[in-house]
Image (cartoon, rainbow, N blue to C red; front, side, top):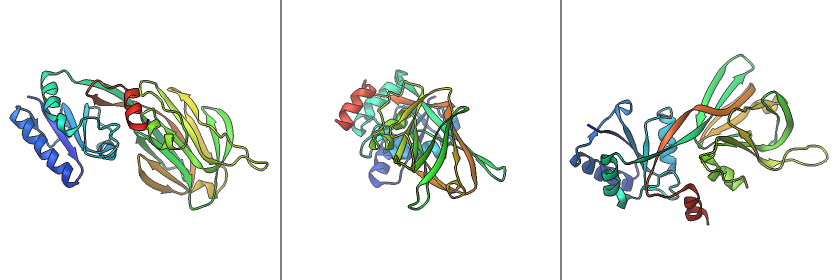
Length: 265
């Protein structure tokens, strides 16, 4: 028997659509499980933010995830509520199309020897606290690249290239490509400071190493998929593509560039 795990936000419209979905699935002979590890499909009902919360709260499950959009943009959540019957029929027949997506990983090391790691589907944003600029030594693998000065930097996956990265003027990247994009946030470029003013692309096996230049810059705000944490005493941050990938259900025959045209142009 097919088993589905339902994840939703608490917006009344979402709850109503999720209840309808559950009823239709049960009528179709699908079991609704409360354990995400028992499911062969996760259905996320909500907006793109709901899907990001699902990933963070359940440690980026590799079980295929189908998104029913009750939000606004719906870049990940591409199944419209009125297409639920068609979606269930496709699921029952075993004809769903699944696309793997890269996620990014950040390993944070502290001066006291402590370490912590995070993952993100869209991006990591690393910036200083308050209104002060941050000064960071940037290296790619073992090669020093620049001393960055500015508001901060954003490191995005191809999936995240359409989010915060895009608003900063970064490139849109097809999710079939295995790379990270690094974009500066308000870089300082004058006679006192020299920083790259455009984004750079890193291949799948490369790592970006960030080291604070001074004590003030060792206290950083780190955002990952919209969640914000503040740390002090940071020694270094290493960012790379994770070996783990998630799998999103593609429905309706649209390509990445079809969605770009529909959502942004």
